[in-house]
Length: 299
Image 1 (cartoon, helix red, strand yellow):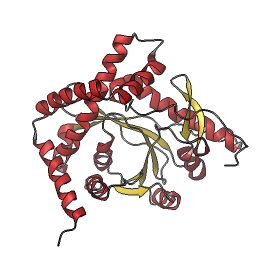
Image 2 (cartoon, one colour; image 1 turned 135 degrees about the vertical axis):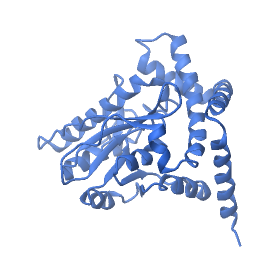
Image 3 (cartoon, helix red, strand yellow; image 1 turned 90 degrees about the vertical axis):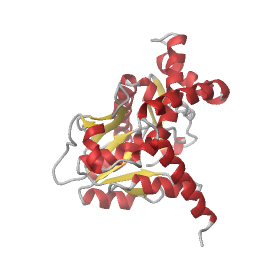
């Protein structure tokens, strides 16, 4: 007998499948309509997005341009849902039709690759990019609290060979994946508490950023490569912007090395967001944690 969680999972799966059945043009139009409605009615997230964009671009763009970007952000967030549903209809033979890779993963031979990414474009497509590049992707993530939704996303993210690694107690699994010469995908663009990160520059302001990627790179020597899956201008497909390996700074001063390498990762994130400002998740309070430390930390 199906449990309530099983029934809820099937409803969620069917819902996304139906969303993905819509023609792409209709999905864009509907996302535009829903995004406008959300922007008008959700005062809290509208203020967060406008405040974030003003922090980042206030010296470069006027209020009207900033509001225009914010409106497109709300539309693009809805579009992600339709794209997840659309992904359910994809088969490996479809990949080359809709996805382009600017480059191929690079790095030192004999080691896995640490993939730096963020909530840019549609990050849910990263497993497809890894499949095209013939890299087994281990995606670090935080499991969702609602079991049926977690089950749906776990199933969708692993369809094409990716593996999921919960952030809790993930370090050993990450080291083993790199030893197997697999890739490890880490999103690094969200706020963390001061005890979990280091403060580095992001759009000209100090942002508390997880030091996890820098810590792993310093421990293993695995190359860090930025990869971002962004929408093409015509809305018909995606381009994986794969940058060159980010050089590792290793001076022997552990704290400074964590900060300098994390700064370089933030610089790569800022660069792609500047290229595609309406494709980042501006509704997140990126600068929420402010610099404060009542005692020195030994990381």
